Amino acid sequence: MSGEDDSSGWQLTESDPSVFTELLKTLGVPLIVDDLYSLDPETLESLQPLHALIFLFKWIPSSADAASAGQYDSEFPGFFAHQVVNNACATLAVLNALGNIPSLRTGPELAELNNFTAGMDPQTRGMVITSADWLREAHNALSPPSAVSLDGLGLPRKSEDAYHFVVYLPIMGAVYELDGLKEHPVRHGHYEERGETHGKCREVIENRIATYPLGALEFSLLALRDDPLPSLQTRLQELQSSGNSSEAAEIISLISRENDKRQRWAFENSLRKHNHVGLIHALLVALAQGEKLSSAQGQAKTIMQARIEKRKASGEDLDEN
Figure 1 (cartoon, rainbow, N blue to C red):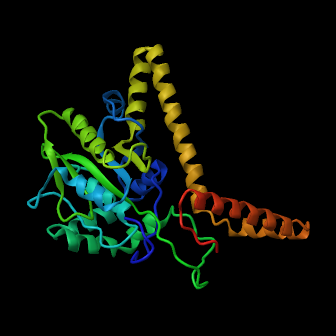
Figure 2: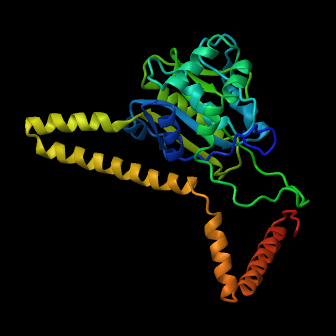
Figure 3: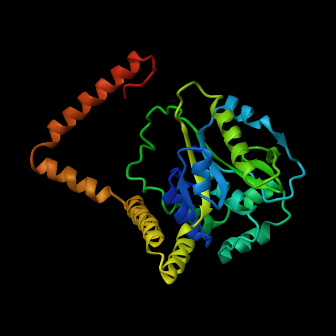
C-alpha cells in the first residue's frame, strides 16, 4: 500500500509495464511485464507462457476483506513476504511472484537475498527484503524526482487515496493470491490442467472488482510473462531456413512491434529518471523576462479557483489554500 508515512525511503511506483520490466532487468530475471486489458481466454493465451497477474487496486477495508473469499493457507510452503513499510508493495508483489516460479534464473543479488531469507517467517522476510539498500535503489530508480516539496510550510494535509499491488499465480495445483498486507497467502481453488488457471484468476479478479461501486475504474492489471523476443527470433530463423516466407513475414512483424514497444519503454523511463527542475526554472525565468509571469500567475489562480468551486459544488470539502 502507498502512503507518505513509514516508507523508510521507498517511493511510489507507477503501474506501468516499462517500470516493472526495467525492475525485472535489474533483478536479472528474463521476464517482462505487459499491460492486460482483458481477461478473455484469447488474450491470456496470446501472452503464454504467462506466470502471474499483478493487480493494482484502490485499497479500502471492505475490498480487502472481500478479497479473502478463498481460504488462508497458514501452511503455505512457498515464498511469501509481508509488506512492513509503505510504498514497497509493487516490488514485494514482484518478489512474491518470482519466488514461486520454479527454476527461474535470477541475478546474483536476488539469488543471494532469496537464499538468505529461506526458512524465515513472512514478517521477518519482509523486514529483510525492505532493508536491502540495493533493492530499494532499484525500486526507486524509476520514481520521478521530487521537484517541489511543501514540507515545512504548515499547509493542511488532506488524506489521499491508497493503492495496493497484489499478485495472483498458480502454485502447486492451486491459484493463490499473495498480498503482503495479509497474514497468509489466500488459496482460491485447485485446478486440474494449467489452462484452467485462467478462468479461476478471471473469476477471482472480477469478484474483487464487483466489490466496488458500479463503473469504478481504480484498477490496473499487468501480466508477468516470458520475454517473447528470443522465441520469436528462433522461430524466424527456422522459417527462413525452410523457405516459408509468408509465416516469416508475420514473425518479422511481431518482432518489429516488440522492438518498437521496447524503444517506447526506454524513452518513457528516461523521462521518469530526468529531473525537470532546471527546465521549470528556465521557463519561469523566461516568463519573468518577457513580463508574462504576473499574467500567467493570475490565470493559474483563476483556473484553480474554478476547480475549487466545481469540487465544492460536487460536495467535496476542500481547503482553498
